[in-house]
Amino acid sequence: SAVISQKPSRDICQRGTSLTIQCQVDSQVTMMFWYRQQPGQSLTLIATANQGSEATYESGFVIDKFPISRPNLTFSTLTVSNMSPEDSSIYLCSVVGGGSYNEQFFGPGTRLTVL
Amino acid sequence: GENVEQHPSTLSVQEGDSAVIKCTYSDSASNYFPWYKQELGKRPQLIIDIRSNVGEKKDQRIAVTLNKTAKHFSLHITETQPEDSAVYFCAASKGGGSQGNLIFGKGTKLSVKP
Image (cartoon, chains in turn cyan, red):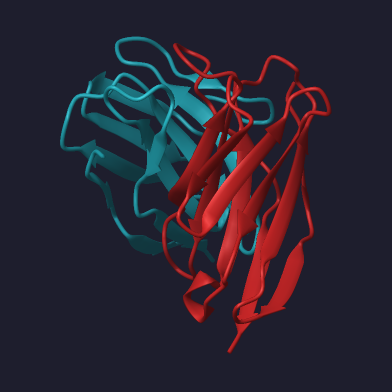
């Protein structure tokens, strides 16, 4: 499976600021996704990061709040904008493994705390 | 859209016993059903998956069954061990191409008592 890294691994931020999370994969992948996992909860899909075009957002998530970039097939960023304490979560990127039908593998996650 | 229900939310078993976690899905177009194990503070790890053209799949102590007519699938863990203790998530997707996004169940916290 692909090796996925995320930066930062954790951060503590002030209300009203923004944080950009990076996701790097060691091989080219077609599909990349961003998920949110609130404390003690399940994973919720934020958006599909499309290479060379705008991300596709799920219901309840908007581009102004969670802008996403995907400049190439190995890298994506998620920005959490104008943060509030409710944004405190783990943010995970995932990729569909090369050659697999639909197997998804997750990055290590970014633990965000907003004060 | 797709909705995935997962039961039970918590499950406690004695070491060596079997554990069963059940999920139902709503979208009959879903055709890919993975199971993830998440240990505390770690990323979800894919442990087994099943596709709609298969009714059962087994990998050592872990098996998954799928009933497409009833739209439910289950995870079976036999001879449980303390290291099986974790949160398990089921998921569903339509698979392939641009529809690879996963919809997750709410998770089952499995505790295996030695």
